[in-house]
Length: 549
Image 1 (cartoon, rainbow, N blue to C red):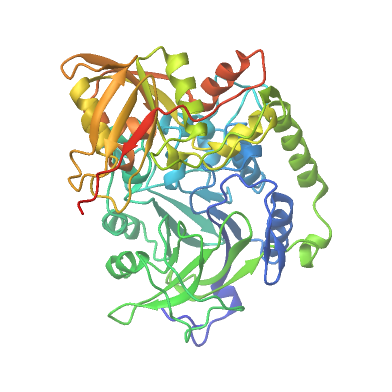
Image 2 (image 1 turned 45 degrees about the vertical axis):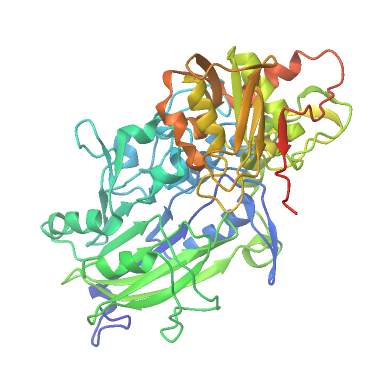
């Protein structure tokens, strides 16, 4: 299709449609950052810009291209991302509602796809967010959580048990006599990023192959205007204004997807790379695809305008602008009162838990490791896991800890700042030899060691050039562990599922899932009657190999 109007078009013979797309919002209800154009972001600010853009065309669809939830800011995460879902639901018209029929109504103006982070807490939890039902820790925003007002589509996520799709692959919308198909695909590498038991039950197929497989079915329904929403992306130099055909600097993994896409795809709304994209991508043939992405975290959005020829159903014009959502400028000079009240309500609900005092720290507890690889903060997290799960040993990946625990009152928000990864704890059984092998994996195939923090054991290591023989010995209560005996081990689910290439965990036996990591840490700290003191305890000892003279 040409990106310009077809000669001889008459207004009555065409339909203009606006698509407003956000991506990688990550529950950033109150988030804002400084940009070259000014401060940008925040739910109320983004809301003002989106509603202003929508007011220019009554045929407007709002699109979330994945990661609306997951890896979220505290305000949303502490309420299990119900705020993020409710925020996007607020853009729905009267046809949208919290039932399957309403979500997939032809007249509902909302469409979403899952990103990789939608699966962080498992498929069942994501389906709860969409379909309704209280979380075990709820209720949060509503007495009975009713779910989303938007449909979720994805054509490349299947259950391994029966090869059935988890979500509908596409959705068709009718606008004043013209039809548009929206087809969704999430990141094929999601199982390599997200580590939880859900991934063992799901299959993620190639984005382009999955999309292409449904195009004949869509075309058989007489539809020729097709928009792909893809949770994958690329990089491009930024610029202002409408799509400029001379600015085609797009690079990254999205290119291989675009090259494989069926020629009937007109527009690709992308995401995941948290970047600017606005280009006409020219494939090897004469086909041109409009490709967009609107940054991240609600700081910008894609404003896409298309024109559809009624007689043919073809898109005859397509153009876009990536617009920043700037504070105190343009539409955000006056914010929507209801949205402001919504953000205040969410913040107040979140603060009930986030500001709760759990304990006190007599001094700052530091994440950084000493020369041997031991971290005081890592010791604290590992001790909490081992104690609360009743295991022999516990391991924590230092890379999962984001910062230090400051001296003074300990609140849930402080703990979330340090460990926002939302992992369940898992207890498994390993042999003594497997534990030695596990500790040696800290050096295998790495440019530098990836140290695990330990509880219940101590060990010594040297600087051997052989990555399989760094560990000298491992001790429990001062006695070398029995290589043939079995020991129980507690780890976050990310590690239990082989994260950071610690594959020994995958061979563990008698897997038992426990509570969430922060809930366990909270319960552990509540057991302290005095201010917390946590120092390095020589759990890890490094021996240097003498240099020969």
